[in-house]
Image 1 (cartoon, rainbow, N blue to C red):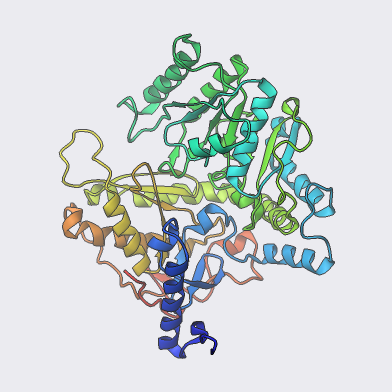
Image 2 (image 1 turned 90 degrees about the vertical axis):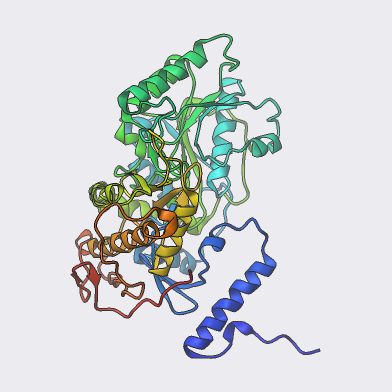
Length: 509
């Protein structure tokens, strides 16, 4: 019986590329379960990537503002990350070392402590666990339970810690687990209908009432876990005043405060760690994604007096990933040395300012928000006559995502109803690339808004650009300095059009 031919090599040229592309997607659909997520909305087959750009098996190029769900702080295949990985591979060092001390691990922890808020670093311990953020969350919860002797956990509506009820019930010794949900303040869809400082104050008051009311049904908890910016929850930044109140409330009641910085860390929000915006010092920080420099790595950093666990408590076989530690060290150092957090703050403010007019031009755009280079655009029902925020419109958000893909732009969706288009570009995105991203996103929104479901335009036309518009070049690997983050030689921006490189073929709709 003959062997089945390798259909990934079918044909040649554009036709062969398309056949290979379709064949891989077809086999994925046949072999993988319905649980796959990104692959459904983004039917591309990446084969090469650099910086902001991905090239698919079909030859199309895309600007990637998903960034591996935020894991790629420096974009794809950054030279300093590749060099760090090669150095370990060429050295003959072990690639997996469990929790043994190694020079690679020592360099990582040294660089990590250098970036932590000083008041936190002075009394910190770092705990390596499984390689994903969910492992670090479970480890943090295990830590505070052991330290306090209590079991309950306070979390917030809209949170995404990968700490589901099922996961808690499946954890050993967690039979008494209880998670109490508290209101998370936000302006656009304030749970109290007021927003602003008053909404944040009411949310804080609610938290105090729940904790101090003996009949609230919430026993004294082992800890409180919060995200300084809810990413999956819809790109919702926590007000700094509210963050400070949570710190005061938990400290006064001896409740360890866990800051989940899986999405927000390593410069993403405009400071190296998002807690620095409010100036608070948490008791525990949960870190993953960008700290591994694109490779799987997760750690819990905590106050030293919480270190009461026995050896082997919440361990993991893959907590000694040397390649991830080397890549993480290179990433942390590059972000710190080049002050990419400050650039994220400036660029994020500029992006939000340029996107906010969409809320006036198109009735289907409800809100533009974010912090640093975590940007969210919420799509709403343009036909609604509600006096407050219009109902979320997940179908329109999905349509915008598909229109972006047609134009060679990859974006994510999030929010309570998957109605928020999310931008998570690498911190190394250039000014020219930023202009291209905003141009394509605005055109995608306009295309949806002018369609039947979008309710038609409410303002001027943008004169939308073609999905075939060229993609801006990536910076040279020899230009890793901050000076190289502004403009790219060889491609110019003229009236919103980027030139000087080969064209992007239209993506699948």
